[in-house]
Length: 306
Ligand SMILES: NC(=O)c1ccc[n+]([C@@H]2O[C@H](COP(=O)([O-])OP(=O)(O)OC[C@H]3O[C@@H](n4cnc5c(N)ncnc54)[C@H](OP(=O)(O)O)[C@@H]3O)[C@@H](O)[C@H]2O)c1
Image (cartoon, rainbow, N blue to C red; front, side, top):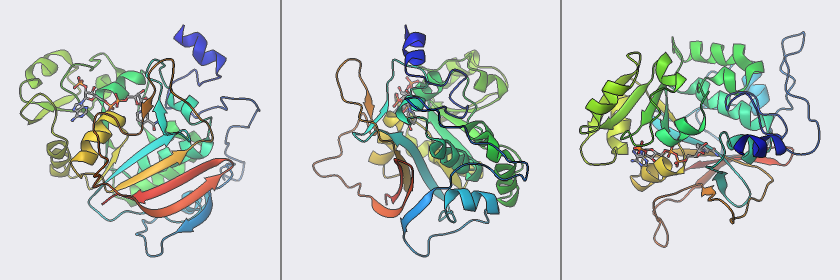
């Protein structure tokens, strides 16, 4: 049923990490590397950007494709999402619904890869892990044509290995057989849940208890990542962990891709950008617009959140 629905909508069949193909209509060509070694992706068009943003030493190819430089004040927590015009980020009943939400945007896959390549650690929640059974959270899996430039960026940033992947969970939605845990990930959990999780996950993964209580304290999770030397933490968690982090004032920046789709609410329970926490009417979270880019009908908006 789910597989049929995905096929109908043309969603990616090989896993969340594979470059998204167009999911509706037309046959947009996938990005490719030319014989001269340049990536055949239409670069993002810079529409507006604040001056004096930090800039990492990006390889020329990445700067060309991104439509300018990129960097963060460190240490920082940066979140990345793709949403529809009406703010839907996930259709939880479908695996890899991101590909549908993103409407096949290669630019979105490129930005995802670029942020992964710049990060020391990538934080996800157990439900996001579950929704992407073959997910690796590697930059080159998000956007293969720029693999060499992503590797060069990591080298320039002084990262000898891929970003550490950290999973927030109390065990309830954790799939201990997920291949990411076989390869080795960091599981951040509560003191009471840690022994049970330790007994169920492969030895390649490390389980660290960061807080008491029945939910993982997101501030303690970020602190644990800082203690491991991670200055740039990229959150690719879903809207529930994102909500917890926003409520705790932990997110410095949001990279938001807005696809041209309108999702609506009705059958099923689509998830919005923030779930599990009410911020209005007295929200202390306000975005300051740092930049806007576009590629086709997709917008790439970057906000500072604190
Ligand atoms: N469109 C996008 O850009 C985008 C980005 C990311 C994810 N997604 C999609 O979002 C969906 C999953 O959304 P989600 O919000 O359920 O995923 P999530 O936030 O990544 O994971 C939520 C789970 O994390 C665990 N958790 C541990 N500590 C927590 C805390 N302090 N606050 C909140 N949760 C905590 C809980 O499970 P335990 O019971 O295991 O503790 C909770 O159910 C998937 O379909 C995924 O593909 C979309």
